Image (cartoon, rainbow over the protein chains, first blue to last red):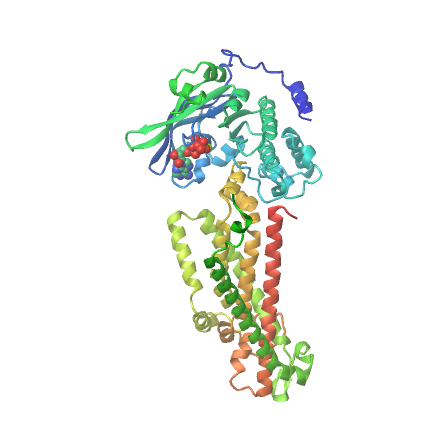
Length: 288
Length: 291
Ligand SMILES: Nc1ncnc2c1ncn2[C@@H]1O[C@H](COP(=O)(O)OP(=O)(O)OP(=O)(O)O)[C@@H](O)[C@H]1O
Ligand SMILES: [Mg+2]
């Protein structure tokens, strides 16, 4: 099934060359452009000094020890911090050159283009069908036939169709954890975003479900730009084109540990020949 | 080596005495309820013996002729309660949603405080307000009673609904927001489905309260010898109101009739609560995905 849809995808998009050590297509258009991004929770500066560019149709992985701010940075990409009381983003975060935090920019519009899959699968307490159809509906798709088609193609893309096609009207909460997470992925791609942000999407899944989702990501890459947070370094090495390593350091101003971007480069480079000692320590398992 | 005996029988004494206490308390509550039901039913039997089922089916209540038909009061109770719900439910849900999803934090605290204060205002105060203020614009009638009851149950429904709405997991809300939903779309997709059961429960509790409310209804309903009419501006009467208003000068048979009304009201509120519990449980099961 998955193989089939990969085939299908191949017929529309030419196969990509897997990047080797030096051939990450730097020339790929920039989607996000961050300059000195900082995120605060109240007066606590959780992250500082993040300067990086995310490229189109690539998979970018965020790795780093717990609490270093990977989730915090990821949530800045789709204005998810807007809903957290006290959270604030500083610095410049541009999406196709537009400042995402410009007061003119609407978070709703941003999130329609930049989707997110959360660490814990979070289907809403409605049917499988309604979970998928919700996004297209709020985007103005009303026709039943069109919705049906979107639901089917999204579920097929997420390799879930065969398992749920006979129970689309059953509650999504009755699915297994792995199925729920694939449902959440299906739901995200149903609105045809440009970017898909994924926060440890496999942390609650078994190796088989994880492998399916990784396969899925490689397949989706031709259609979406993907940013994934992961604690699994093999996963980062397997699926991503670029890897960003975050870590914490003592913020002399507040005496608290603040997250920061240590190194950002082609995945192959990060894992074979990192430029920073801290990166090397982390990927070889010597934490510190 | 651990032998089986060491694992068995180690439930400690505190645990056991707590169990005893809990069972005792539960038994006491049931006993009191049972006693009330038994003594009330016993005293209600006089009127049933005298009039038979016509107590439940007749719409004539005429103590002078020894006729006691409960229907007008059943009607008055249900009609005023429904009017109260029609007014109170949209207002309560609106206020509860405003508090949980829209109001800035500072305002939110004050609103919660104000609603909780309203919930503890004695009902006689609302009743007197109805007599003094409301009656200048509305005649004493089903509608006037419905309005006063609505004002009384708005804080109850609001405060319960707010608590339910607030339990919506952040993850559920973020799920909708991340798909580009506006705040209202998010409420429809995440908050309401999550809270449906609890909201129904809150409304039913409000209904129970409205049905049983005595003094406020007694003051503004008009205390006409009950009539069954849809005319909301007609004066009427309700079960608790007629009990309170005519107990004093009632003879034995009439008292028995009033007690029978009370037992009937008791049964009706139990039915309302059973229905509420069933709806709440079913919607919770559905939300959990077992249906
Ligand atoms: N809502 C919040 N309010 C206050 N502090 C927060 C909040 N969310 C995160 N933090 C703090 O910000 C820092 C970064 O947290 P974040 O969740 O981004 O880390 P992470 O790298 O994703 O960690 P993990 O790998 O454990 O998920 C931590 O110190 C955390 O305690
Ligand atoms: Mg995280």
